[in-house]
Amino acid sequence: MEPFVQGWGLTIVLCAFIVLVFFTAWLHVHRELAWVRALTDYLGEGLVADDRGEAGETRPSSSLEVEAIRDEAHAIASASDPAWAQKQVRSWQMRAQRLEPTLAFWTDLLRQLGLLGTVLGLGLSLAYTGSDLTKLLGPLALKVWTTVAGLACSILLSASFSMRLTAWVDACEKNLEAWDARRRTRRDPP
Image 1 (cartoon, rainbow, N blue to C red):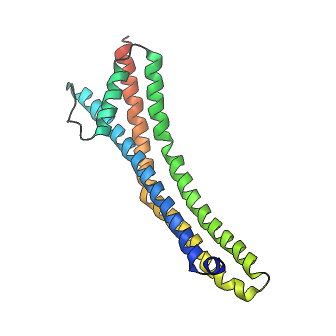
Image 2: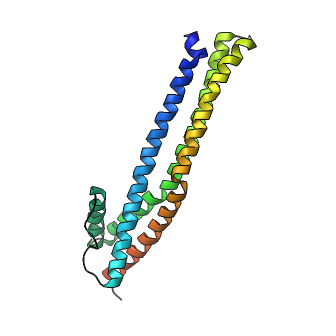
């Protein structure tokens, strides 16, 4: 076990785990951003079509996600219970607003995993080497790579989504507010 802890073995395992968490985070944020984009586009197209006086959809559905959003929007627009409809609209708003904290969670988790790998490697190396510092410096130099992996994955995830995510969430909130206001005025004409 000592060669595994003090050699490249533990470092490779910890770095592989960090990369696995990175791919999980990337897929999760990508999937949620795709939903926000689909909702934003669907509601925006509906608002533009209403302004032009067009009936029906402006274009056919391109995915199951868009079809699900279309079905939910239709159910909300034709709901007889206004409290239920408002609850559904609020659930859309909350899902869109959770996207930025989700990205922050994943980037922070990746950084923390990198640091944890270094500290764990240092602690295990101390357990095997005792107080002999010459034996400690070699394994410590290897374990620093987990911090590098965690920081690199965190930066890559943030760079991949940060700017686009903020713009799409803002656009989604604006389209959702406009769509909901129009839905309410149709339901309760003055």
